[in-house]
Structures are given as C-alpha cells and as structure tokens.
Image (tube, rainbow, N blue to C red; front, side, top):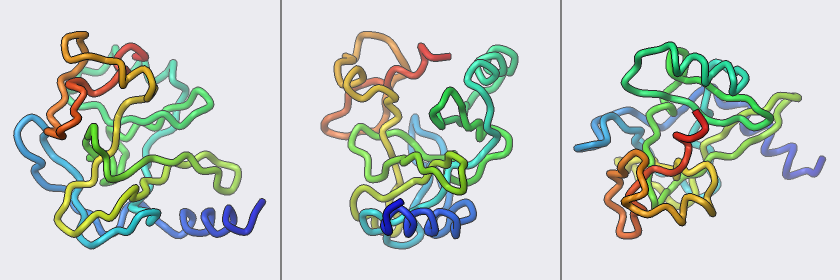
Length: 170
C-alpha cells in the first residue's frame, strides 16, 4: 500500500482502546457520554471501537434474547457487527449528534477490519466527542421528525429529530 496507509496502520496498531478521553454525564436524554480530556486536532485518532465481533445475524438474535436498556454496537462491514455491550471500551459511550465532531473510520490492520474513532474537527478538552449514528447518511437526511425512530436529543441547530435508520436493521 501507500506510505500514508502504512503510517495510518501503525497509528491504529499503537492505540489500545482510548486515551485522552473520559466518561461523564452528557445531560438530559443522553445519559453517559465520551468527553475529551485533552485537545484533539482533525485527523487525530481518539480511540478504537472495540468489543466482540460477530455476524450481523447473530447480533440480531442476541438483541431479541437480551433484555437490555442500552445497546452498544457498530457495523464493522462485511456483514459483521462489533458488540461493545459487555466487552467494549470507553468509545462505546459515544453519543449521536446531527453535527458531529468525530467520525468512525473502518481500517484494515494486519488483515483484520477495525474501527477507529477520529476527530473530524478540533475537539477541545471538556467537550463531548460525538458522531452521527446514521448508517445510511443519504437516507437518514430524509428522515423527518414525525416518521418514527428514536428521538434525537443532540440539540444541534440542524437536528434531524431522530437518530437515524439503524432500528430497521435489527
């Protein structure tokens, strides 16, 4: 691969979970959230989304079986899900925002798919680290407040009113 891809792989290989972040109360309707303990500049890795990797069909089965209030998961691609509910790190506390300051990037490291949480803009110490939960961005942008789905509490001026369309996948 390219020199920049090799550098990126080394960056994610060096991180173990998350550094420079902590969990705190994110406010009404949001529960716990992930907050920066230091400044992150655009492109800096905040952490890795870790948990148990499983086929999406197995995860859907677990969701039907478990009686849990909160679900911590992310699509890894290739029909696989990272379930961070029981074995995840701090990044599982990332909340949604319709105006995110971070993004999730799928990387291939040592032949394995991994998810890096990367600053999309400058995130100052004390700020909540948030990303857009919408799995299908162009579809999620068409979702209106009264079309169902889980209500959004991000408070952004451009808030879509719902978290996205992931509920129909599970």
